[in-house]
Length: 86
Image (cartoon, rainbow, N blue to C red; front, side, top):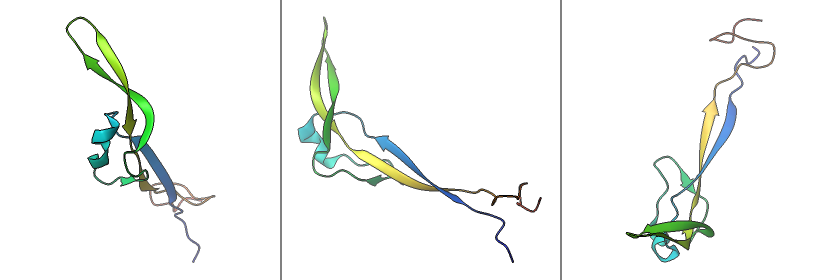
């Protein structure tokens, strides 16, 4: 019995919102995502404070998150919703 369905593993990456690094310790990834950075995260972004007359920008931190996702796909040479076509 040949396998007709070959699921592909996809890795979806995202970054949390940029916040002051001291506040980023408690930042959680969205549900279903795994945090791959630790501590205060990565200081690779800027966050903004809007004042009445102008906007200030400060260096901040964010976390990187990943989610594993199985994408159903037919094996090579098969097709159709149930992968039965040849």
